[in-house]
Image (cartoon, rainbow, N blue to C red; front, side):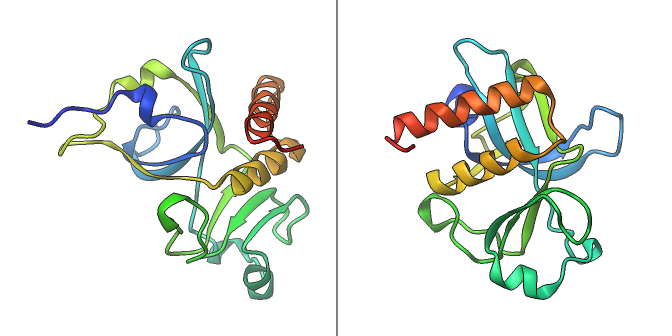
Length: 178
């Protein structure tokens, strides 16, 4: 028998998820997406903050020398003029030696999103017919770097900034980091 995984166990900060046929808010064509959960508090907050990833880097005109030397990096003055965080292909960034099999970016402009937790609860998780699937969780140091980079960007709202700062403080205190 197939039992779904409770959403509260799957959708946690730093988790990397695949979402089959993600339904965009603007009515755009639903496509398969990979997203990283940036913030959620299942006890207090009904909203989950997350970001999409993209592997469509060739069209972004990022110099190949940049890609080779910065396996996980933050760039707020990129050659393409867009704030982003870069993951080099095949570099371990998550638990169980997870890595992206192609170079991947998180672009901050229009990609830091929030959805009510009830949105996620409408989709099947942890069954043969799942729509949302957990891939991994970012290593703590990578997740901290990603959050710190996003917090430097001008492309987040005040509410997102507050939530992400709180998340960063919690992670650092839980891991005795400063």
